[in-house]
Length: 334
Image (cartoon, rainbow, N blue to C red; front, side):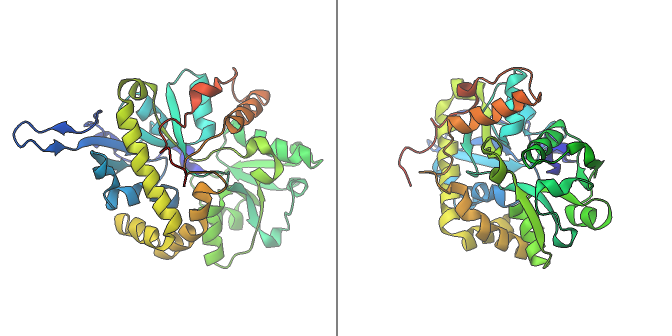
């Protein structure tokens, strides 16, 4: 969840060469030149991003005439870099894209990376936090965003609990395991990474998943984004990129072990055991109950936007139809 804090990465050094359009003819050789494209992540590489690295390593982007560079975000973040046309594509989340759209930032979700929200509030089992009612008298460790209190309020009110009895503490950059051992009782995690790491450490967790308590909180996180400008000026490029990414994620669904090997090979600093275990758990959740990877439902976008508006997180209602599109997903169902 600390992706909202900003990352110390030198993204500006690698974003200067962004371009658009499908492959051009090389005037001297007559061969097709690959078009350089930048994909900016939302956080450091992890199994949410495996399909991109698979598409890169197995040549799926090249098949579409693209030379894709995958980079980490700088202080600006993926939303701003894509909106300002410094990167053609990015990884974001429904919550931040909704805020951006309402503020007039012209970015669009072109695919849901994972079909359902796999995040929740986690605590070591010995703390005996088994429901939102048990949050009373405890300390929550977060990053100080308004959405945290709104989500916790929704869960606690639904369980007959009083959020005024919950203490908030900003964890900063402290990792989940250190924080719950030293400073706080519970925190917001994605099970596919921190939850899997807890399994490997043989730490028993109690988790209250957002999707289990509210349909509106079962939103898309993460999503793949591009800009309205690129959609309008070069829809063929968007189609080519999404087709290759889709093929990469479909491969990861069908071949989680091989996909994990590719991610480890591309990002060797990652913990191999964690990547393999995370990939095994996450791969079936990419597509889950959807007909094809990336599919997005209007009801999911509308429900979460309505919840955000009701809780004062956005000042205006979202134009749902403009926020996402399934237009660029491969037409055949998997």
